[in-house]
Image (cartoon, rainbow, N blue to C red; front, side, top):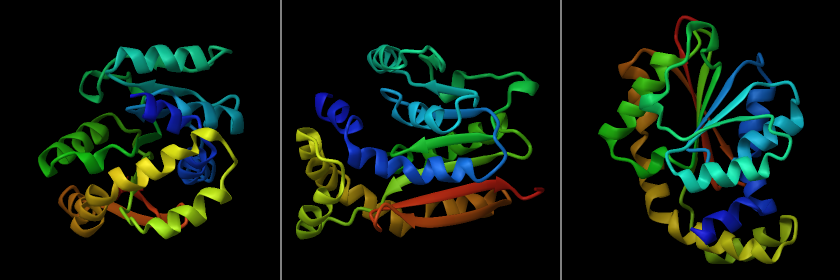
Length: 210
């Protein structure tokens, strides 16, 4: 757990999340729901760019929610200890952006579909689902090059752990193209971008009536 917490406090992790922030920034600003928010790194980054944006971070782990609240010194974000399945917004509170960062690629195909189905159920009619996942490229010599390009921190050791632990599942996710299949099944538009120096993929799902 401490390795994950250290990772979210590093400059490299902010660079990993940056494409999500830029994507949300490029469209209509509405409520953003961060699924599996962890210690709240993404919501806090979004608040720095858009101080007035409404953000909700949810996570089933009470320790993560406590840490997120501790880091949110201005108490400007809503933190909820729950899962996507138990989150039920009113019609006027439907999020325009639902974000899954480094999460879905760890699940089975059945679980992935369940998460997307539930997200679509609560999504604003003009909203989008953003899924950021590692691609799983584990070439250790590249890791030694890239790590020096991020803001220096002694906690940057976590970058090497991340590269190692996501390598298999990341490659599997990239090869299987689960979200492209789900988009076809649910009649969604699908787009993807290779980001974070080709180490991650950002996939975007939208209702096809937009």
